[in-house]
Length: 244
Image 1 (spheres, rainbow, N blue to C red):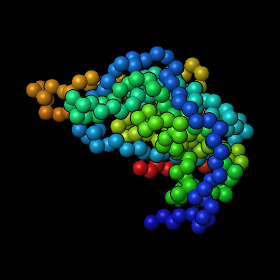
Image 2 (image 1 turned 180 degrees about the vertical axis):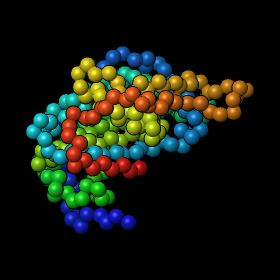
Image 3 (image 1 turned 90 degrees about the vertical axis):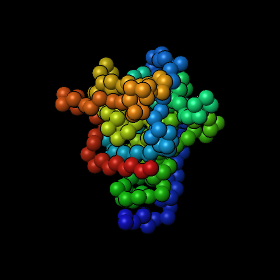
Image 4 (image 1 turned 120 degrees about the vertical axis):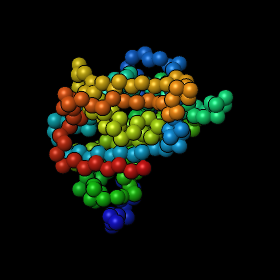
């Protein structure tokens, strides 16, 4: 079992939030579309938190990363319109549906009074790291909370963290990796998607007369011709964490 940081202060990273807002698709999407969720998805209504640490770079100060990530989210929410949607209870079917209503994804920008080398081993569990991937926005009611929240946290050394909280019904492991590649590619001007999502979704329950399997969103596997997509920040000394 990995040891927690021995410094009790690390349970509080002394964050100050500069932004807490919703981000919307850069172009108009079909905000009347509803996606049917499979039986498995019905039970996967929980958040997965992902966290990446980046060492300081004079070429990419935190304010630049905030602006680029926010732009990338706006652009990627066009092909991934369901990620700006909300889960709604369907009283007729007694199931959850995913409404692609363009209600927005969450975006947070924060700063810490600590440097990266002061918060302990970035590869070890630390209760304070939960503050770097906020799951909800304080100014919204429960039914209006976004299904995904992105957060950039800068540290006094110039390094920063990018945290994400994603509802599991949105993406599985493979689709999540493809999404991150596409998000990274959209941080640059006039860049195409790294991977075409090729999403297909059932707008109504599957016809069980033709198939005994439930159908929901599916994504094609990435081709061998993938573009090399990276966030516009150096990836050396990068540490990533994922927790549920």
